[in-house]
Image 1 (cartoon, rainbow over the protein chains, first blue to last red):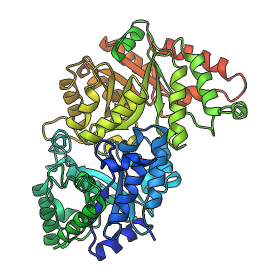
Image 2: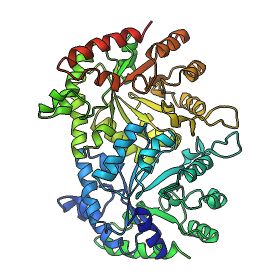
Image 3: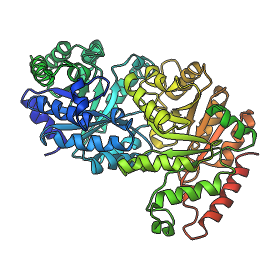
Image 4: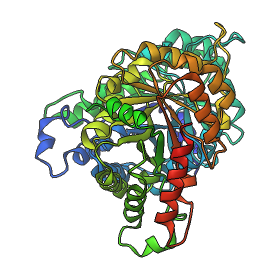
Length: 266
Length: 266
């Protein structure tokens, strides 16, 4: 089963929530700190409480790399808890010259065996191609991100009348001949989302920014429903992971996940 | 001594070569393969043969991360061989939302203790600020890269008449209030370099692309000399590292480094 097929299965089952495993020792319920490996114990609990309705899990590499060598082991061990039919996303935001991107692709797909990755478009096609040639994976390329700084460059108006992020979407659509591309579009940019949704075509859309960053789950869902597009993945990280710091955390999380899942389809 | 001061000292000593430690087991002289840790033995040899004239060492993270957990140890051990007065660059091309960039910055500066980093501008100021707040470090932000794909987005003409990469240089100049910013400009783009060099002002310029990628050391040096700008760092990776696959490698490397050092100033 390709990564795209895994996702389409979930979308057809009306599952659109991606759980962002941005695990932070400072924020997890205190009772996990008694475990031998608190991060792994927490991630396992999160995955068990959400797997029946999750469409994907996204591991933000920064939260693991900060531990140095051990970080890679934590990523690798966490992946083992994730059911095989649920997509895994390496949120690593890579992008470099060809021979370097090649190495990053090997690390993410061959060593760690992720289903998909997030990528920076800035350096252009030959920086992405070493990833795209993994045809069975899904490659999410940054278009319009959820942060304020998106105004600095992504939202620059080009001489041909398009914004830079629209040019990225146009190019990624061209490069999507193997139907293995996606884009990242901030859930915080709801008006831009509505205006651009008709240009997404076959691209899978990963939307971060719901919850702590201010994006609204209902509004995003309505926009996709209105456009008749089901290929969307709404990432929620902090709002899920840190929903309850008591011993009741697994139950609270599971209930909140159910609520979000219902909200993510109309 | 700040990272910028380290560099300016070297520039004043007429040292401009950055040695790119893109170490690849497939390409290093075979005799290193008998060592317990071939990559470390090779890196140590390279550093010993070049340290007297190197202005900086750049570690391309992809070449280490592909080893998983061990990669971080290789990076950390390699840094120990580099003399304290020579700049170290984490060529990691990071860039993410604020709380994530914060973690990456911690990993690179607090855990690994690098002097500088390479960064993707695409997500804008708040994705860079967690790095820039490390005032004593140098932050190299991608402007015009050495690869063909630079045409796809970096070279897009904006509505205000500038190219995207020129807008990046303009913004980074604004953000350089602590004199801790630099840019990456491809040594392969010699005409663009000449046309833009007057806009670099106080920014330290890291130029990859000499050697295997086709950039010409003499032309780059002449362009900077003509502009009266000494703040440039010319990266050479493959052309140095794989200059000789015999047992004479250290001697060949040392001689080639001397030649490049002389060539990198007129």
